[in-house]
Length: 515
Image 1: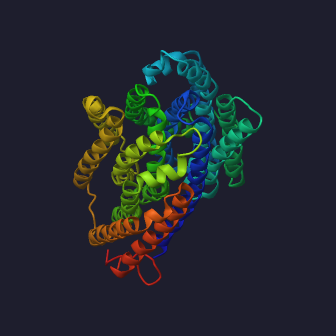
Image 2 (image 1 turned 90 degrees about the vertical axis):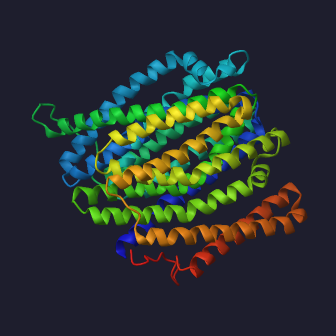
């Protein structure tokens, strides 16, 4: 019971802080839509900000986090070794990413052409190059933030590492309000706000690590220092995962290239994707952050059965939230988009196109959330070969589908290809992981059908409420009130159904069904 509660408690901490960050993110996007609509400045900034975010996923979230935590778990008991390892990795990242930042600033026009060849003939190109050059050093800052956040996660200290996610959105919102009040340059001010938030985040996570005994220290650089060997192992193992993450980012590049061919489509797809990413962040990413350190510890101590039980608990918890989130976003896509963004320079036509994209992106919530947890099965064993192969396969499939579907579905081709790819990869991953010893236990199997039934009940209730009440809330401001009411009622009904079917006990905790 203690372990199960630990999973839920840690998951709740990460999810709540992530929810705050994403709520601020939606407020940021509302201001962006209000002041900039889907115009050239919005398109140029969102595209330019894609580049450091893409590289962050490659160098920080994509490779470093997955390899660093299992290795750091093995040395964290010895503070001297832990401090030396962190110091070596810090200065290695600083040197490598500092050089990459310089090259990125120099070759930014080439990067913009690669990401959005549809920008070449208008003002969006010059704006994107300018914004990209200002933003590019953010990859260095946020990767160093990820280093110290990973250290905190390895100690099961999730408050600071997840709370800092909100800092960026605070600064972006402040930048937009400042620019509106003082007739400033919206795009330039947004870029500066990103860099300032990165510096503040770095200070916050570094201070949190120091308070917990981890800091930068002097290092013995002789060949006898075992931490040099461990660091070498870390970077060598990071290379294939970085390649895998880099390959997977081709999906993002293809999406941006296709959307750049249609005026406004970059904004439509980014806003829709961010909404679909909310439940993925609250569920999949939060559980991924919590599960990897614990699973690594269980695998390291040879407790395979407990590791399998823990992974099953994580996947069941993920599905409990991912399935109704997917259903809700697909069914209420137009009301959500119009309520959040349809004002100021963001027109009705923009809202309609964004709603279409949201309904498709929502199909990927379940497979992505569960994929993350299944891949932790391999990362916890320091097996990086299989995740690399899956990244290669998913990119090949996604790119092929996106360009094949382009003539028929135009700017919607990327989200359609993305959804199909994620489901096929997830199904294949389940089959493959079974061969390596993972299995869905009886608790998961019994819960699955009841979660599906509860989600169906929620959907029926949504359909009834929408058909009966939506006409009384046709005004845009009232639609927000209607949405809040419908989401609250449907959420309560969903969890009440889970309680009735035995997924939750009388205290609304998860039953184990005998495991």
